[in-house]
Length: 236
Image (cartoon, rainbow, N blue to C red; front, side):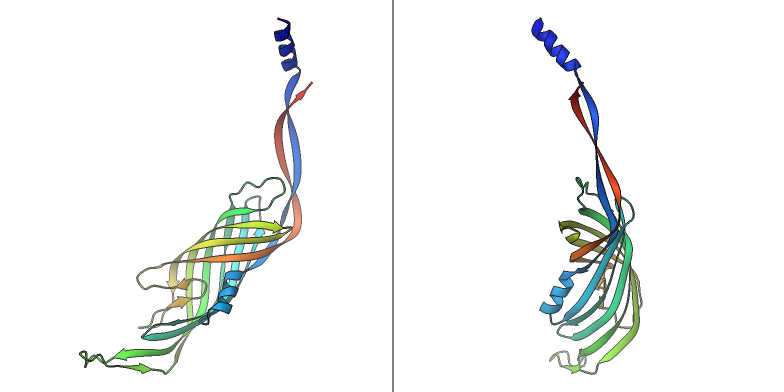
């Protein structure tokens, strides 16, 4: 009986209280670049490009985000050589689904973009088959370049990615992109083979894709309190 009374008395002496922890969350402008495009520029003779990316934190989970860039791409096969040059921009929102602990600023996010591009194409050369001599398959190549200017395109884009803080305010990340072409300006009898910011096009589909690896730096503008409430038992 004495033992049970002692245990009951000890339990009555404990109670649950809330312990409040306050941390500072950073709000500001994060700027960076897509290093995959820079690497491809040095490694691929048929490509050159760059992209500047940025986001600004609106709330705990919502960010205004966008990208701006320039690309030049040469596409060649056995019958055609084509060069595309142009610029693009994308703007939209990102939502962070990662629950950071303490003062961490990592992101696992999904985002939406509207993208637009202005570009030109140059048909460098093309090969024509002689339809009057199908048995021998005679063909000839036209090397006279022809440029098509004033081309535009508009698309929507879904992004899925991560951004991890390597050290104070410096981030690395990657993302995957799913694109749907809304509209494009084309020349009669000659399709857009490549759209800067959108990537390769295919006449049988309005869907596209892409990916990116980025490095960025956060410029803190102000901070807001992040409150964490923990329950714990204490003796009265």
